[in-house]
Length: 522
Image (tube, rainbow, N blue to C red):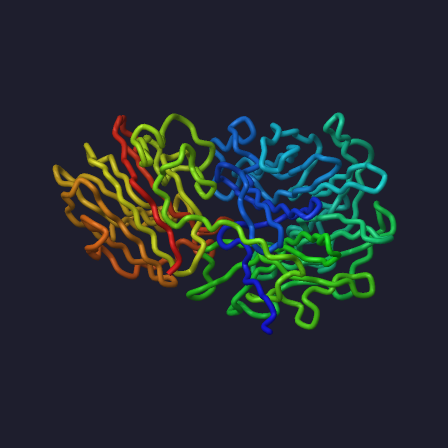
């Protein structure tokens, strides 16, 4: 009989920095969202493999003001924990281009929400905060910071700890330096998580940056405040030794959980490069088992790496409803997969003004600005995919355009839009690379309803349009999709695909109506 298996990643697409906790026989996971709103998706699972999104932790403007937040800043590395009937999510808000950082936590009694407004923490430097609830009921904050003795090399950081008073919502007492990592000169010691297993306190961190040299390391101590000794097998998990052409790279930033049956599992981020060392999908969430050997974690015994297909956990499989490929916009609210760029400002979208349609009103803001444009999008989750949509839009001037966008950043994206040139309506494909626009193709269109399709096979992205779903006309074939990877564009996010409408700085009362939007793997 064939052993049941699961496939990695457990959350495909841009779901980096996973954090996990267990409550009874239920498992919850959160991930980073940077400049996208709502912030911090939260997922539920019964078997660690099949995950269903149950909401967003930060789903109100009062919780998350992303106005003017630069690309790849915003919400970094959330941690989720549970204690005495209360769920806690703690995270960093990277506010500005200069890297100003503010740490806060929110609470809820139901993981699906509502979650509280933020409790901001003073004198909490660094990023990637986590919470640890000790056996005596006291709560501790861990994060990273520059060592008090000074940085010995670039990006040299240490992990520090301080008690958190849950009544006053403030850090209290002395702070302690715990550890500056196992890999000297590896840099970027971050993502600390503290656990108590048996007689030891274990500190798991990430080192080596979030790219190819990413790694998971661990130290332990019988005393909470140290000294901490590093594991002689460090790093306990990394893929940097497998080479840049391996199917999974950049493994790091881990959190662990013990199942209700006593087995141990680790979630971590990783990437799946394709078409070369390019990672359009961003950093994704992976799952890997480990055992305790000689008081230390042994990840995926006998192999020591994360694999694309692995034996299923010793848990009863509980499948979840699949995300519908085709959204007809029939519901009263947007599906969990949809996001805005920064906190949505203004009444620029509606699901009710026209039945079974998403209406996007043209805003002056455009995708080339770090503002809140009229854009609603979802993550690219597959290397080969197709997107189709039906749109009604009558541009009234050359400044107005609407259509489908494949987005990495303000400076790197494709705009597949309908606009007006003189008195003629046209469909255009515009490539934006390094902050410069280039029209790759354009054709006159006359139908009231415009059907558009994007097909990606690896890094070749092809664009089609038509008067119906049955007859497609090729506008441009095999555009270079590598501009949608952080390896070209920089930053930390994965590619998004969505609907967009703009007046490019001009006043407008116009709108575009989208009848449906379909995303599917091919």
